[in-house]
Length: 275
Length: 261
Image (cartoon, rainbow over all chains, first blue to last red):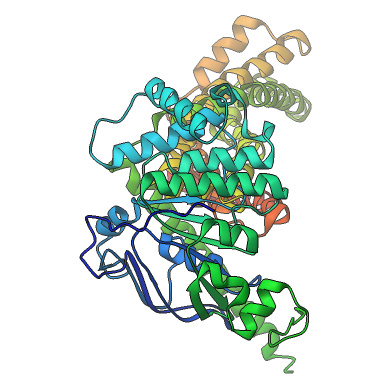
């Protein structure tokens, strides 16, 4: 298993985690989804968050991305609180994040190449540098497609013509287009066969390693969690109940984590049927 | 249970819901419009929406206008015959088409065709995380998806209505000359005598407002759709029904504003 190197981003003050979350709360109506989450992710770490459906994993990522506004708590990137920063500063902090969505979320009105080129142009124009022309961006998109193991000719196809695994690769190419120093992966292997899942995990590890990024991945897939992560945490009912090394996942000593990772029906986690 | 108060409470809740919805729609429109003066502006999306709304709606709007003008001429001929004022048909056709039928029928056709498509497209993007993906790619979804479509709708519908006005009058002319025995030169002269610039201009102003409302309802419902295919379907229905009702409401308000004594 290859793991990303632990390196410290030059922009991060010494001893400050790349991402620090404190007391994060989010409720939808009467349903509490995040209930005081505290989490530190050191620079260069690949953190895997596991947990059952509805445990708040996706909501946690969406709060960091600004797609959902939390009710309380703080989210710091490089020591700067996202939730109290000005709008332009929030945008600047979030620009360093690349995201691979569960279903890849490719724009179906564009070709595959245009999807990746969109990521290239969007991220370049952020940085007040010269935005590449459409032709240049498409050329660069071909290189990125090669980087994720796809032939550049795939760029002419529509996203609906691709298999799930190929869509994930394209989503990854688009996510890394802006050389992000933080990367989020939302259930990257869901819906893929085990071999393709392993291929995608390998690509994720390679990309994170090459970019020297800090990564957070959420997954149900224990094999994937151990391939991608060097740190792991488990969310249960909106609270982080365990954190440790990813290599300890299958033998954590925590009854809830062990029940979840081994897929046992019996244990402290009760499976409540939704009414 | 209170037989008297419960219906009043239900009415109150419905009214509050309607006000809340109207407020949310107004805020949505203001936010989208604010992006008109804040760069960047997505010209490619604007031009593609303009072509989709304007050019590709041309056949359906043209046919609707042509037949509407023809039907008014026929109906007027039968009705006016009782009072021996068939000569007023040309004036009635041009007045009805430029003031009312052109903008309203074109608006309803575009609401069904383009409003539904906008809602379905943006709604699908919402439920498949494509809108969230735009945000993560440092692209404001309102600026990228909504603002260009609102502007395109506002510009495209007056152009369509101008075509509808011409074809509506042509429909009336064709039936009057070919079927009802009018002299072409007499009909044209009567049409030109009855044609007022104000009628055409007000029709185009109405069309601009209708175009804005159709795009607004399409984008708003799509943008706020939830719950997969069913949610997108509901959003599309709400977009078409809402736009049609608002269109008729604003038709009354604008008519009252411009033509009431």
